[in-house]
Image (cartoon, rainbow, N blue to C red; front, side, top):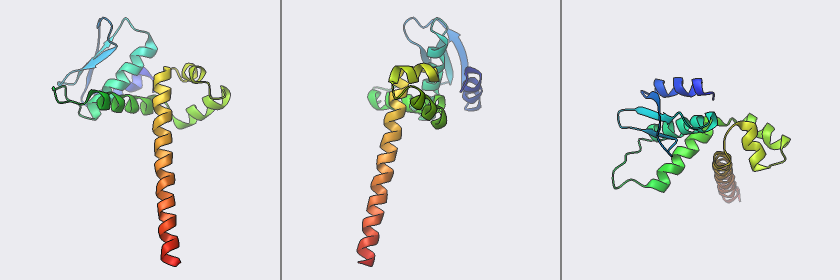
Length: 145
């Protein structure tokens, strides 16, 4: 998604996007839906940050003492990866760059972390699908056997 598409998507979810100097942070989302993006970061980092903050919003992550930071950050990154990378674009970039993570990231205008999260999630889903197919096949064989 382009930045304009991400902003429209965020607004359709009830978020309000604004730019501010956030020092070292790239972005943040508040309980009100106000989402701040650091205007001092690169355009690529701003897109990734907005997609990531959308992920927090969609998953309803709260920021209480009880929140699971590693889990929430991975969910937000995974959501961002799926907003920013289409399977077709990924397949083309992987073929063009022979699987080189950095080159794929540059081609897709994301960072290597987002590419790796996308890969990991797609591979986990594929493995889960393959596992379910094997279970169904084994059940079938027992039923007919």
